[in-house]
Length: 207
Image 1 (cartoon, helix red, strand yellow):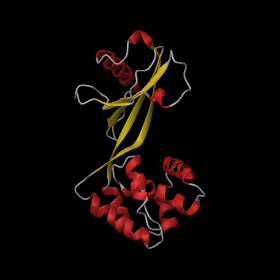
Image 2 (image 1 turned 90 degrees about the vertical axis):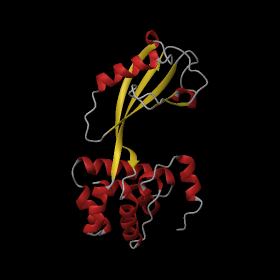
Image 3 (image 1 turned 60 degrees about the vertical axis):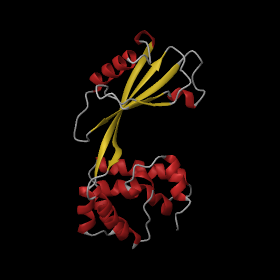
Image 4 (image 1 turned 120 degrees about the vertical axis):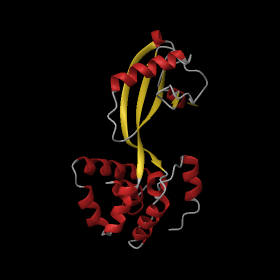
């Protein structure tokens, strides 16, 4: 049920002592969803109406399969690079090793993000193969430098702006406010916000 994901980031405001602990609530949301307790738990915690639950069912999203590539070669001075070629399975890649100093200068790591419908079962082996092949074809890497390739699946990747999403989120947010819960962040507001936008919006958040 998407409603639990929608409010999980905001529950941290009421239950956690620091913003970082909001990640714990996201983990709880994923855990209870896997064992099928989400609808019951959500209704017990917030006492929301059937109208709100129907609104959550109309919300839509994409999932993301990340492909991580470890390389026996140094990284260029780049970070996030977007790829607009429809033939390429990933929409962007990032030299994630440039964000820290965990690897020696002769090694590097990047991730490539593949957007998929949540109902689609991704073929991990095929995605690994195609990601490495296209990274090599685009001149980003050399296949002989590849040391390891791994994948991971994020069910909730990006909110989709459906025709009714603004009305649906308004229904949910207004009902949650009656229980003194304010939704916030990408999944709390069902907005495609990055960190900079979240910081900007947080400055105008009235609690």
